[in-house]
Image (tube, rainbow, N blue to C red; front, side, top):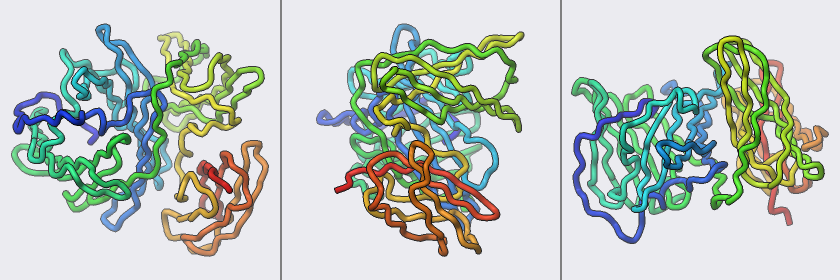
Length: 391
């Protein structure tokens, strides 16, 4: 759901489970935690995509600490940059409910966010009561969320909370879908059943979920003197960690229309783990700071680096140990070349793919982080691969 509905109208079925709280079924609020979901392209016209839900930073609002969850989409058949669909400022209260204080659809900055006068319950302890529902209104649109099941099965997860979202505009139903929450992971997928041209299923792909690192360093923001324009998308890639000199080098990528600006910055760090890095863009009109979370690990290429953008294929499982399956998003009528590179940029495996879905033996590769690249005369695609648990 890209639009947030604000005004709570009615709440019913107020029985609360004392054994569990809503926060048990939400991603742990720790900087760096991420859930990744995948949607296949379908005949109804729904484009294949990867959706990520990431805790990217913290902010103080009225003296309370809130965690910012970023929802980001990477659509396979679009040439544009990955686009956010929400930024939510969330915290857990003493009762274990998840509260929402602010939101934005474009930027993770409070200056661009809608800050609510008082926090609203984003995920209630009432989710453990089948039949519980609440309605929210925004102008002519009303959304009703109802708990359909507290023991639903979705993909590899059982005992999920299934919440049905029904949206009416001017009294007419225009969207019906379900969201599934699993204990300890949070959002693990969804399915849309109406309208017909939006029917699709979003399935769980992977998660990076840890306990909160007690050391979260906000590294000093570097300053770049340039003017980028008012509207832009940005992300961080090419994460390189020097554990001897304790520096981390990243590439900031800013996209303004068809113009891409890249800035390579090096930061000094004291501790491994979750860190927040920043960059300040100075211009004759204004000075704006941007932030992103990184995980500083002993690997030269961090396991927590974001997924590759605009990929034309998916691979699974990921992480993997012995075999991976490579599947192209669209039918390709010509052979594909697959190359796997290690963190030093050296090619360690090359295969010629003759099918749209094919298994590759990676048993000869060591544990670590790799870049998988496919190439034809018509397309290229890259994606990160983690190899672990080798015997």
